[in-house]
Length: 220
Image (cartoon, rainbow, N blue to C red; front, side):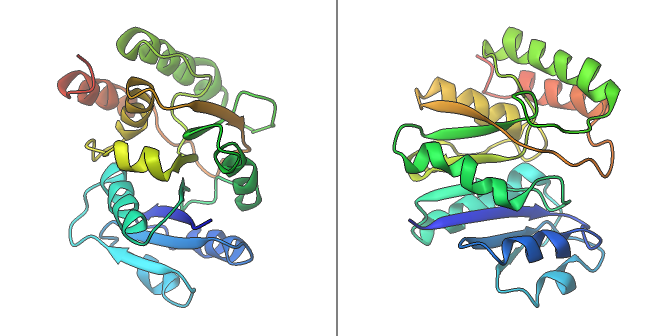
């Protein structure tokens, strides 16, 4: 099967080298979408045997993922993996994430930090921010997942063709979830490890995501 790993990258010169090194030992096609980085991200990526796509202006993570999805589909991808550039995810866990789709039983797989694998998550994020995000997904989208904001996900070709990411910003996580369920795709959560180098999204990001959702066509 043609498996493509899409990595959106914006100013990730410090960590993307290790991410690409780890992926280089695995049998996947890697696509880095540089979102108009202003540091040396592009220079770090170039020596690796990966496809490098570049945005001329910074459009944010959702737009970078859609650019990667479109390219992978054009190249005949059977499975598309979304994987962060900051070293939070473990490359060898991709095999576990794609397994439900390879089996033919599922269309979309979402990674979860709450299904058994240990992640040293900051207390505020684990006990306050993510529970609120779960509640928002339940109330606004009428969907319940254990991990509502995880960037490690896998789409079958069918799912990637049906789900067009319109939210350029961080609300793309909720958009993908809403469209996966709304379009009747078969969804599964799989436990993943998340390594924290920084805090990530906080309350301010959460409010922006909620605003984007309420102003979008996702929420009917």
